[in-house]
Structure formats: C-alpha cells, structure tokens
Length: 144
Image (cartoon, rainbow, N blue to C red; front, side, top):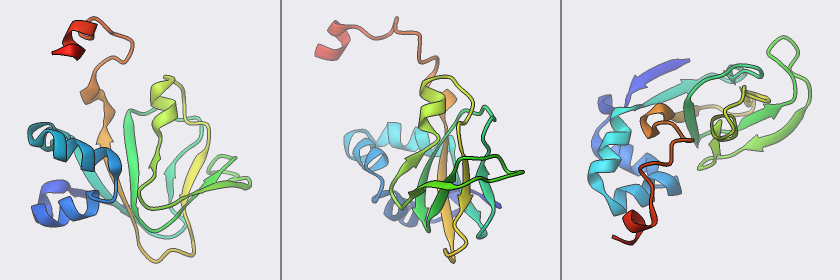
C-alpha cells in the first residue's frame, strides 16, 4: 500500500477523481469550505492486486471510496479470506456500516487480482463527531 497526501496531487486532479463520487461532488457543489475541510482529513491510497484493504474484526474510523480498480468483499479474515460475497466498483463507498453502527468490520476487503491499479480515497470519519450526539441538530437549524 502506498499512502499519498491529497495535497500532493494537483487540485484539478483531485477534483476530477472525486467527481465520480456523489458524496464529494455534492459537497463541493454545495459548500467549497466543507469540501476543503474534508480533503484536509483525507488520503489517497494505492494498492497492489491481492492486498488487504480492510480486515474483518477490526475497528477503525475511516470511510472509503473506490476511485479506480475493483475490490473483493470476502466473508473471512486475512488468515482465511473465505468466499467472495460482493464486488466494489469505482464510485462506491465502503467501510460505512461499521462506522454507522459502531461495530467492528464484518468482512475483509481485498484488492481484486484482476485489477491493474487500485486507488482508494479515505476520509477520517471522526471529523463528523459523535454520531449519537444530536444536540446540535434541531428542526430550527434545518429550517434556517
């Protein structure tokens, strides 16, 4: 795995990569400041075919989007990958359910051996704060 700081890439290249991800595309269109804030808490990861990206049973706070290549979602652990239960294709989010439900990862995600280049965009989800703290959310704030 090779980890790259988002700001090592030209801004146009990052914007182009993220234009295929609805989450980032929408945020960029709605609020450039929020988009830039997310980029400061993000990284670009490049994997070789066969590398493990997420491990079943591990807890972490990163949300990922596949930019290039294909990923296999496997039922097992890195010791015994088990069978392929799904594929992740460019533009798809992964790692989100474990964060939303505050659980460990329920599957192992592996870079597909048939992909030549696998590029993943990750954002540190702790920037969003405690998902169970709803004090800052109110109907009045939503109507403003």
